Length: 139
Image (tube, rainbow, N blue to C red; front, top):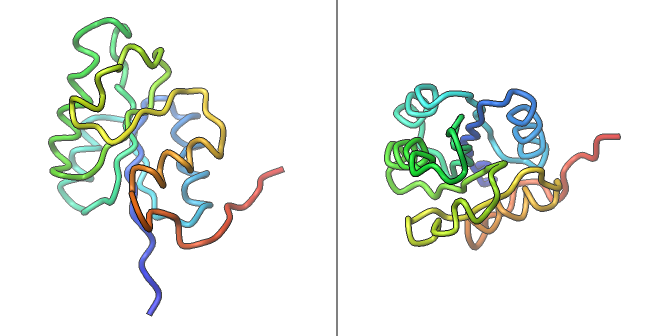
């Protein structure tokens, strides 16, 4: 019996980034739900058990604004113990304490395809790779 593909929730309010990240991850063999709002993310988390959340701060006003954590923490809380990777265009130092706050990783945008897939695999832990060996290369 084949193992089911790992399920990921990708949350980003920028449609182009959302579509790109979801496509890359899906092409690597994961099951992906892609949403663009906090409300959609919490609804998805209420309906499905995900293996990982890839989460943008969703329109936080500034990389130095303390409110930048608000959406991240609410969505992560809605996911229960689901590992959550911060996925942001803010400078990484804006989220320097991500580990202490209980997040599973930080991925800065722009990202390389390999970096995105490596961040996903790292956050999923041992056996976190996708069901297919290689993603489809888009030319």
